[in-house]
Image (cartoon, rainbow, N blue to C red; front, side, top):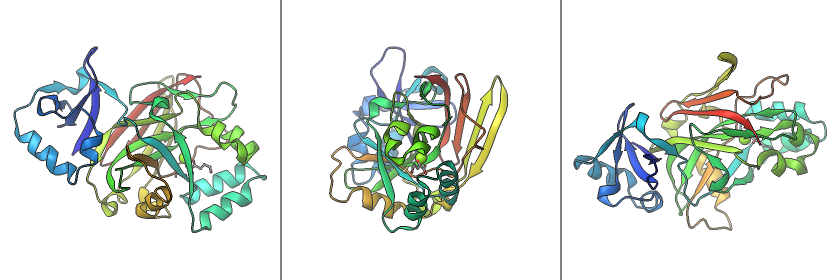
Length: 285
Ligand code: DO4
Ligand code: MG
């Protein structure tokens, strides 16, 4: 079951069920106007199953503007959860290599604050690269949607945009490499209720096109993530509360070659089976 936030023309943000590849069911008439109460309910999937049985307005997917599937949740990210991420980062920086090596093996995961929803862009909106960086890449990541009790209620697709030259120069620059305008894309919607075992069998793909030509493509699977989702969520919810829930990016397992950097106008497509495709073009910020 897929849940989106959307607008039609100048409308307020509405909540919809993505019925199929072409149709969104508008949940406004049944009083569902925000995500959070639903995500926090005991059985979100059952709530929607009831709603779908009613005759509700249907809107063409092509006629809506998708909004990021976050309201007030903080967005956090796990790092160095795939072997590929560890080796790429150790190669990127002599200075920080030991830290990446250690955190991959350590019991406590690397978790960092990514952003508040105002820096998140939706599918179809431009994603940012920093003007003051030379080496910018997308990080295609499975994003866990956690309710205020830290339970996994859904999954969406995330792009943890990163400036690798800034991060590689000094690990203490990580927040600058990771947090800036339009530095995170989430969407196109949330797939509710998939269990971890099923999600780990999904495939993550990344394709980057420049002037209509494919300049990079890669593939991985959440099954390659070294830690369990419960472990990552458990550490995030230790010693702090998230009254609005949280979104947790689970790390990247696809890293373009070191010679590759994004350019303005590039088209970035991240697909995750079980969810859909997150599409963004790149803009310098
Ligand atoms: O440790 C730096 C960031 C790691 C990261 O974002 C990733 O592995 O996806
Ligand atoms: Mg990342």
